[in-house]
Length: 215
Image (cartoon, rainbow, N blue to C red; front, top):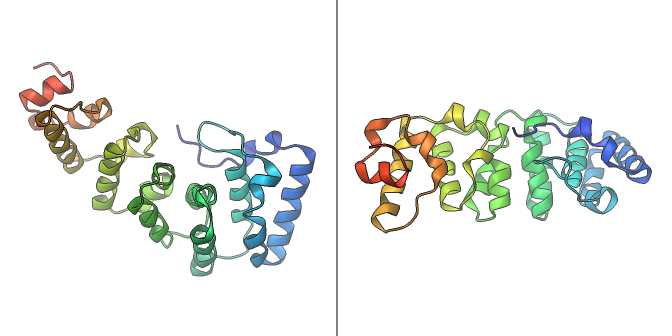
């Protein structure tokens, strides 16, 4: 399961100096939201980059703490977060994307998710397809994002909420993709099978064989 809020687990992963820095950074951002522009990039150097759990790294979690300290709401918050995303390196961008479910932005931050999904950085695509996208990404865009994961060889188990959002149209798209792979003599990714087999009429004999289904 994807961890949506790393903040409760973060303190035990930080040493005394890192905890003190993070507390002071939160105070500075609370007093002046613009302080995050200099503190956000420093989080990796001050807090470390080791894994916190299977989903978050320590620096991403620290940046989530900084983002949630912003005394902004709605469009103002989105503008500040978007600036951090667009001027940040990939590690900072991943932190922004993973933190979106923790922020009071409703669907206003969807442009950031769409921007990540248009790119080719698989770590950003994966980070973009978290709980925020599950909640807000329109059906057609969600289906295209899942298909892009298949093309980019991102395991579908990393797509948050896939079991809930999957539908017949997505299964049809995946079945068409799989059929093209079969015709080209290429291997079909096994993790699409659970999504396609829900609709048996989409399974041709060739596809059943490729997905190791019983004929």
